[in-house]
Amino acid sequence: MKVGIYYGSTMGDTALIAEKLGEIFNVGAVPISQGLTNIENFDLILLGSSTWGYGDLQDEWNDEIENLKKMNLAGKKVGIFGTGDQDAYADTFCDALGIIGEAVTEAGGQIIGFTSRDSYNFSDSRALKNNNLMGLALDINNQDDMTSTRIENWVEQLKKEM
Image (cartoon, rainbow, N blue to C red; front, top):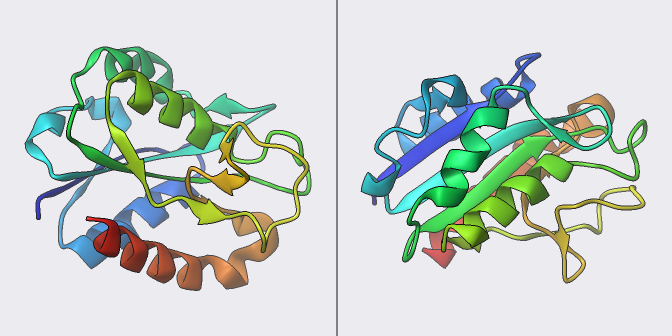
């Protein structure tokens, strides 16, 4: 299985998650500032972003999100991961996952790796679909002790869904 990992990170947390995923899948993670090069060559595409302000994508994603929408991802499986703060931004927690998820769907890709919202404490998120999160949502600020387990569980889930 060929895996491609692309991410946007300002403070470094999402970059660390992307690198950890890269270690697990034995591939390099590509900063989104380098573009979505060769994305069509992968069986599994992992896309990551931190959420900024009141539900915004990480800055480097702003140009690439439009490119993503225009791609042909038909038949591609995509996992989305990101970071947010469910205490300070309870009504926009990990909205970036939802923004990327909408773009993936528009491009014809299939989102895999939905996760339960049960162990989180937020009021709303653009990443919610049928009361599940569109991917791996991590809160380094408030639940960092759960990060490693969440990553491990998500990777196992992705492998099963492939």
